[in-house]
Every structure is written in structure tokens, then in C-alpha cells.
Image 1: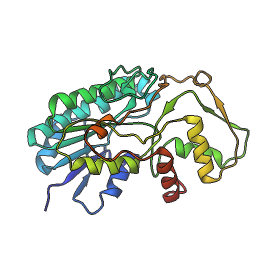
Image 2 (image 1 turned 45 degrees about the vertical axis):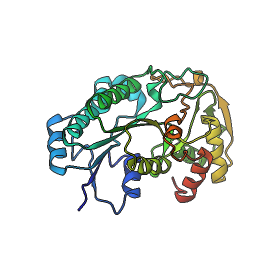
Image 3 (image 1 turned 60 degrees about the vertical axis):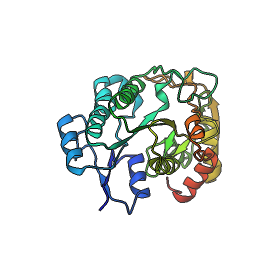
Image 4 (image 1 turned 45 degrees about the horizontal axis):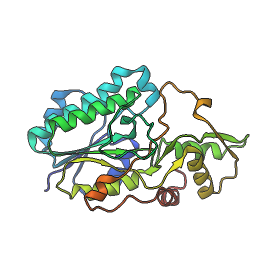
Length: 283
């Protein structure tokens, strides 16, 4: 039997998609209950026992406002855990695929961020994810750090699920932020790219968000249009919805590494959204 692929965070939105798309392969799924990634000894024993060919790390603390108030927990999940995985993977020659985020950037450029742009996170979430990236790069030679943004997938939770729920309810027009820009990305599009990248011998950092740009407002419009929802939407500003963690005005990611490596581009976000809503009409 071939060496297994270990998927951490397997019960999360992305982890569930990985398991579905990797069906038929030798997969070992883990979650917080079965493996505490912040326990270096437990991680070391698991990797030594399984000897996986690849670890796909989908585990993270992604509730950005909660990260502001629970900074220690954020760094444990987003920095210590990947550092422990990187150490164990390096020891056993295991490839580590680590999922990261646009929040490692400050979000104030007037163009999409490419992989070589300077980082500068403004939130505890972004700072903890950057610390995780740095640990993976420093410790594990055979790594892929995959930054994505505005992610949604089957079962959620996500912006798509929130909009589908609110859109099904009667009420006044929904106000949606229109001054933040990003690349809405389906977990299926992300996992398709991961499957391709696993066949590549290269290590490095890769941006994997869908192509094309949207604001949250235009994203919501597309969700409603694709699903035939008639409730009205009204654009508003970020300032009208203050949150504990500041949201980046610019979450757009340029996929420069994919181009330089000669790999297929990510799909347009509108196509990925329509495919998703066709395949998972209830979200």
C-alpha cells in the first residue's frame, strides 16, 4: 500500500472538501479530538507512526475577531501547530502542504498582492498565520504554503451560506460592504489546484484564489442572481460595520507563481460560484 496522506483539520470546511475529492486514496483524517497539533510530542509520534507521504494542513483558527480577543489561542493553532508539523515532516522526509491567507498582507496596495510582496499583517489572525508560514519555511524543506482568500465550500460556514440564509428571509434590503475587494474562492477550486501541485517537485509559496475581483456587495449580487433570490441588496462602507479585527480593503491575490511554474490558472470566480451552487444548491 502506498504511503498515506494525512489531512489535519479534516472536519472543517476545506478539510471536508479534501476528503471528498481525495476519496479512493489512502487518506488518514485527523481533527482536534484525535490529534492535538499544539502537542509537539503527539505530532512527532503520529508522523513517525504513519510515515505519510504528504500532510495537508487544513487546521487553523480562522474566526478573525475571536483571534483578537484570544491571541494566545490563535498563535497556538496558527503558529505552534504548523511549526510542530514542519519539524516532524522534516524529520521523516514528508511533504507539508500548509494553507495560509491573504491576511498576512496589510491590505492597502492598489493592486493584487503577488507572492513576493512584503507582508505586514494588521490583525492577530494575520500575525499568527504569518508566524506559521515562517516556521514552515524555516523548518521543512519540502513545503507548499498556499495562500487563499474569501473561501466558501459545502457545509460552510461562509459568506455564501450567510447570504443564502438571509436571502431566504423576508425583510428590508440587506446592506453589504462594497469597499473591500477580493477573490471569492470555492474549496473545490482550491483542492483541484492542490491535486495538481502535489505532482510538482517544487517547494514554495503559491497564491490560490479564483481569478477576477469582486466586492462583498458584488459577490452577494452574484450569489442572489445565481440562486434566483429577489431580496434587495444595498451597498455600504466598512466604516458602517466596525469589527474588532480590521478587514483588509484589498484581499486580491495575484497568482504569479502558478504562471511562472507553467501551471493551469485558477478558474474565474463567477464560474466557480455557479458550479458550486449547482452542485450544492443548499450550500
